[in-house]
Amino acid sequence: AAAASSGSSDTTPAVDPLQLQLAASCWSKADRYYYSSLARLQRLQAASTAPHKDLARHEALAVVSYTQHQLYLMRQQRELIGQLAHGYTQLVQTTAWLKEATAAAAAAAAQRSSSLLLLPQQPHAKRWLRRPQQM
Image 1 (cartoon, rainbow, N blue to C red):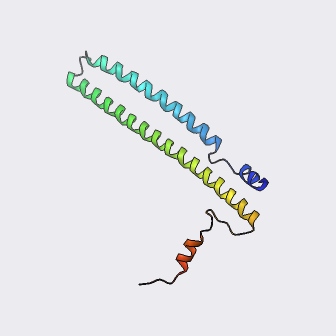
Image 2 (image 1 turned 30 degrees about the vertical axis):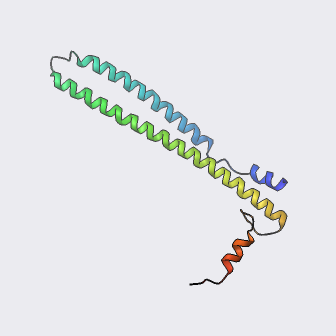
Image 3 (image 1 turned 45 degrees about the horizontal axis):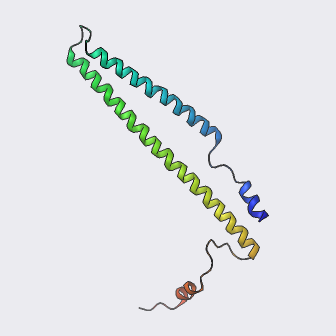
C-alpha cells in the first residue's frame, strides 16, 4: 500500500501550470476580441442604414455581410476550440486513471512477486489458447 501511494504521489502533473496560465490568458484575450467585434458589428449595422455619401448602399451592405461572415467563422472556431479543450480534458483524465491503474497493478504484482498483470489470470482462457488449432 505504501508503494502504491508513493508511486502516485511522484507522478508529474499531466498539464504544465504555466501552459494553463498561458491558455487562460489567450482565451481571455480572445473573449475580449470576440465581444468587441460584436459591438463593432452592431455599430457597422447602424452606420450602414445611412452610409457616407461616397459609399453606395450596396457597398455598405456588402461590408456588413462580410463582417457577419467573419464573425460566423470566429464563432465556429470558438466552438471547435471548446470541443478540443473538452476532449483534451477527457484525455488527460483517462491518462491519469491509466497511470493510477498501472501503478496499482505494479504494486499488487510486486506484493505477489509475479509478473505485471492488469487483469487476473483466467485458467479457462489459457487452456483454450494453448490447445492445438483444429482446421
